[in-house]
Length: 349
Image 1 (cartoon, rainbow, N blue to C red):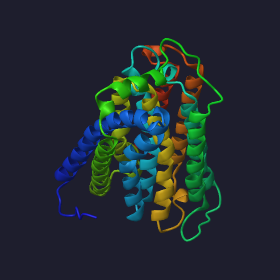
Image 2 (cartoon, rainbow, N blue to C red):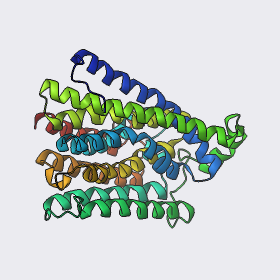
Image 3 (spheres, rainbow, N blue to C red):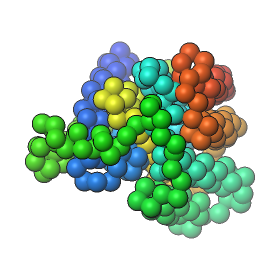
């Protein structure tokens, strides 16, 4: 890892901002490629949003949490992970602001997105249970890490089944996104005619840029915490979490503007489910015992608040209100309030 000991704080902050800008630009381009690939490979927007887009845009956060844990900053690793999930849930409400035709959760209803939300709530409960339970480790790894990893893999399989063999269908309205019609139009567009290999290559290059910028965020974030004396929880939960979550914001807004509404919602919910793996990977990297037992009260509160935020989102996906406060729906307004409270707790703890 680069040694930033002799680098001035101004240059470190500059590096942090440049890395965040790279993430924002590459994230916008990723959304466009993911939207095209969703139609070309036949996975559907919800599954592509969860696996390809959600996983790719989560790379900066993974690198930040893993590097922080490896270098002995467990609070920063945890705060980055849980803070990222919270802010990304709030980003969905922000994306809702850019879709004026109706409430985003109304238009993007799908069985796959509901399944992903249920998976996210389940995975978020695991680290809370681990922190409250015995401090057991095997080769320095807590059993909860294996539960999260296998639980995520099995959950994605269930999401795929929900997409391919749905037992629940949203009621179609004028505002509901017609995925079949969109896929047909995409296939006939100039982008839809481009070679599939080239699309994958472009997607891979953009992912590499996002990952490299994520490494920059992790190193400069650690250096800022050391130089300024700001608490690791505040740096991780508010600075690095927001910066490494910029791809989710950018790709969601870009997807909404492209009309890929299910991709936008799936990218956030699926990305959040993927982000629970941050804690699992960070637990493996942390060599001084169970990472989960390094969780402070603020971290536990943020996870609990995120579970509530996700529950409200699920209610919104089922209720499918066409319009609400500010034109964004009751669930988006509630999520923004809950995140404001959670961010205040992180900043003051």
